[in-house]
Image 1 (tube, protein in one colour):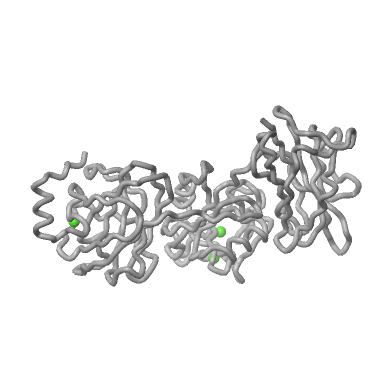
Image 2 (cartoon, rainbow, N blue to C red; image 1 turned 180 degrees about the vertical axis):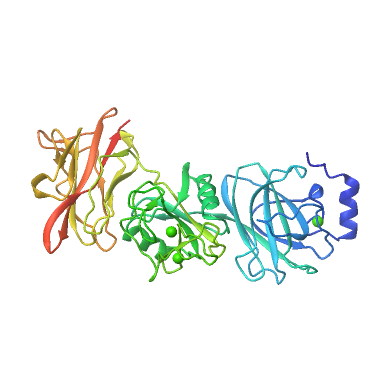
Length: 429
Ligand SMILES: [Ca+2]
Ligand SMILES: [Ca+2]
Ligand SMILES: [Ca+2]
């Protein structure tokens, strides 16, 4: 356990002023709370014996803070632009200096400073450690604690976050899986259609991140350099956005390149697992949606399949349900259909897609919608008036199960056809 700060030690520190901006020893870490800027100064600091761990890089002449989180949050510790000292920062879980559990560490993100991000829980303590990168250097500055909110892509309901941490692809994959947002686990981003890729390129500052794409050398279509690439959701990479000349499977050290990174413009490169130039990783959090998908969709003219999702509430009394179809060809007309029964019919009426509904199928027919440039459309479904051909409209009741799909126009090889999203089952409460 961390030693309690004695009154004598506190008095000594205050009188000398030497470490008023961070304590030299972990055991006396300076308590801080709240967000915003905090000063640090390691001018008179000494190294922590035997502790130099920042992904194998030293944190020299370190000073320590003990921060208590006031609420659950993703928290960024930022030093960029706030010091001229080349710093490194490491974050440890809890206050046990004899058994330090490092959460994250960085030192790569800007010329002098660094940025790290970690998940904090209300009331818990975290040790923040600052030090110099280079031998013989010290200095001062401020670091800023701020709450980080992942960005919502309204087209697919997923949240995205570029994590500033220089890990191998495998480490990044595992780190992402241990993050969560709004109760949903993270994963390296699956960018399996143009719309999802365009959104992250247009809305995030990407740096140079790993994405959730790798080459499965046991895949039946595996061949170098382009065969057998698979997303972390288990789907084959049918849509790709390789940088010209990539993938090339030519690692700097002569090794294989089986992991995908993304450049700032959104193009991909195959890289070796421990590619140190890949300084970030892109995490997505699953949509905090209503219902569960069933029945696979066929690929449409985008090269990928479209998907059906719902947001809002599964409580019938709330009458708050938004139906969304995404991953569609742009500027295509479509509408939503619903039934109490699931079913399966391949290529109904010459469609390229699969009908996943059975029984009596109703169509939200006043609401023909267009997918526009984003390739998605959505409607607010009125739970008081669901379409039912047998009786006109019916109200949704608690305990009801309803299934949804979207039909849409598509253009394949110059001829006009149609396709369907996958199915979505919602059990109302
Ligand atoms: Ca120290
Ligand atoms: Ca390869
Ligand atoms: Ca390459």
